[in-house]
Amino acid sequence: MRKLVTLAAVAAVGFVLYRKAQEQREEQQLWASVTDPVPPMRRNG
Image (cartoon, rainbow, N blue to C red; front, side, top):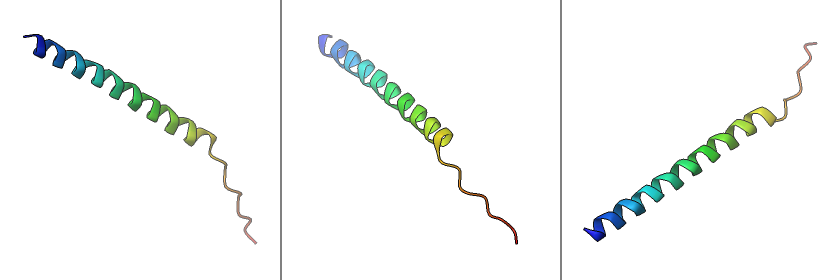
Protein backbone atom coordinates (compact mmCIF):
# COMPACT_ATOMS: atom_id res chain seq x y z
CA MET A 1 0.00 0.00 0.00
CA ARG A 2 2.81 2.37 0.86
CA LYS A 3 4.45 1.83 -2.54
CA LEU A 4 1.18 2.66 -4.28
CA VAL A 5 0.83 5.94 -2.39
CA THR A 6 4.45 6.82 -3.16
CA LEU A 7 3.95 5.99 -6.82
CA ALA A 8 0.82 8.14 -6.96
CA ALA A 9 2.65 11.05 -5.30
CA VAL A 10 5.56 10.79 -7.73
CA ALA A 11 3.16 10.65 -10.68
CA ALA A 12 1.29 13.73 -9.40
CA VAL A 13 4.51 15.71 -8.97
CA GLY A 14 5.66 14.64 -12.44
CA PHE A 15 2.36 15.76 -13.95
CA VAL A 16 2.53 19.15 -12.23
CA LEU A 17 6.10 19.69 -13.44
CA TYR A 18 5.12 18.66 -16.98
CA ARG A 19 2.20 21.12 -17.03
CA LYS A 20 4.40 23.93 -15.70
CA ALA A 21 7.04 23.28 -18.37
CA GLN A 22 4.34 23.20 -21.06
CA GLU A 23 2.89 26.53 -19.88
CA GLN A 24 6.34 28.14 -19.90
CA ARG A 25 6.98 26.83 -23.42
CA GLU A 26 3.67 28.23 -24.65
CA GLU A 27 4.37 31.62 -23.05
CA GLN A 28 7.84 31.71 -24.61
CA GLN A 29 6.36 30.97 -28.03
CA LEU A 30 3.78 33.72 -27.54
CA TRP A 31 6.41 36.28 -26.63
CA ALA A 32 8.61 35.17 -29.53
CA SER A 33 5.75 35.69 -31.98
CA VAL A 34 4.98 39.13 -30.53
CA THR A 35 8.56 40.38 -30.41
CA ASP A 36 9.82 38.96 -33.72
CA PRO A 37 11.26 41.73 -35.87
CA VAL A 38 9.03 42.86 -38.69
CA PRO A 39 10.60 42.19 -42.09
CA PRO A 40 11.15 45.33 -44.19
CA MET A 41 8.46 46.16 -46.72
CA ARG A 42 9.29 45.78 -50.38
CA ARG A 43 8.79 48.76 -52.63
CA ASN A 44 7.15 48.15 -55.96
CA GLY A 45 8.88 49.93 -58.73
